[in-house]
Length: 288
Image (cartoon, rainbow, N blue to C red):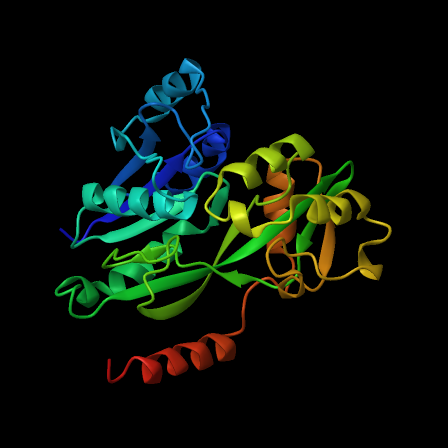
């Protein structure tokens, strides 16, 4: 066992996988694409996937690593978040306990996945008895906020993401509430850097659908630009104060975003910050 298993949840934003999959393909043992077989979101809305996407997957998958996993993930008696947790657990079972289970969203783009996999393999002792020593490995998200004509606005403080676990007893989204081990790897999250219509679709169909005031959020999102972003604050869609400020970088393409944001000295949490957070988690779970 001890494989590097990567899973993506496939929905209306499936085209973004053409950015995300190539970044993790080489270092993964298997990549699972979880698709509702009736093409329904967690809210029960119907979406379509162009057959050309699956043709792209087939042509890209030269090493035969990609598995299409189709099931009934939408359950009308469950909330959107309950549907999400259920799907993640089902997908994790397909990926196999005893492996590193990495679950990513279509809009999450891993920077330097190779180095992260090297780190995971150094922690393989956690895979021996995962049910006795459950852990979560948290890289950090750089949340892309809004695309502009000459660049992109992004949240200038990275946020944790429980993307990896050895024991997928998910409680809320990807969170198992087990001990967290922080790592300074970075994932670019194309969270809000979309069109207004795409944002409305996203907020209406994801697991946090009941938690977002869409009208209030969109008012600020539409108003902010590269001239006024430094005069505004509190940008998070759930608890606004958690995304205090934004930064701007010039970028004309997807590759520009990657290369220019990597040159920013502040994107990675410091070694001291990682050490302090991991020590706190070790003490917190010492006697559990």
